[in-house]
Image (cartoon, rainbow, N blue to C red; front, top):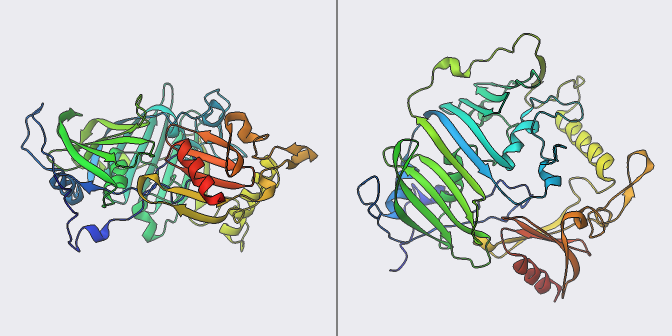
Length: 427
């Protein structure tokens, strides 16, 4: 059958974004532009037995869902195929933080130090929400728990393992519905957030079908499957379990094109749509807890009259130079461009020469560059083409090619697609 075109209604499609961003451990700005072409498909008979529904109708049901209150348990598993050096699987921590390590004098309860651990492994979360101004997420561990609580104009975070707390106050009105700016932007902590990133776009680079029904967290659900048409994409399919009664996504699974274990699997194991008790979002630090307090837009310990943004930027740049040498600041990446569109989009950018070579570091020692003989050579592999020589760093979702001339090509595409793009640019 011919694809059903998205509804030409100002009330719906015009509100949907044209670009999607995956929360992956590679900065691939502008890479994951994903769109959806609707193919009529009826839900097949299965368990439970639910009324038939088309893919278009199910997407409309998700878009129309206005559920504001929810609580329950979520199981999240991620397997991007990252080296242990990056994920901290060796116990050394890794650059993504997590596990209560608080580096450089920061509180181990700071969300930046904790929530990024969701980028690897399996985790159990307890979640609760009461509208846009009250949310709570807790990471349940063997002998400890980490909780992040947003309540109106403040955010509390507490790491029971280290007995440290983080308190962000004075959230401006426009930020109060976003849970605070300190939560890693774009990372889906619930199936709803993950599904929204896919269903917020509508075009013809994917097909969408309804593939039967299922029981998820004790609820009847339809299974919506998004399949990219692009043959170069590393994404095989995305399966979204949609609650038949409320239209709320209960499960989100991103499978790689090559098969095997899911790259991202987020699912409710228990769910309740009634309003959580108000006390759920209250928090008082335990006796003896070390509390780090910040005001929105400022950093703890900031001197009067200093601009928070300038100080934070200066600190980040100084720490980066100490760790990796003079690789350049925020303006070091030049000429960002996006090649292609949809699922096989590739971001192209230019690294500064100093980023590729050894440079002076803290203590006068040489810091390794990012070139094939430097950091990337540790977990990448050398490739050659019309573009010259470069290094490919691969994960199960995002691949990146860094040429010896400093060009970078990155996307949710195959290694061959990156080499073809680099070759084409060199001609």
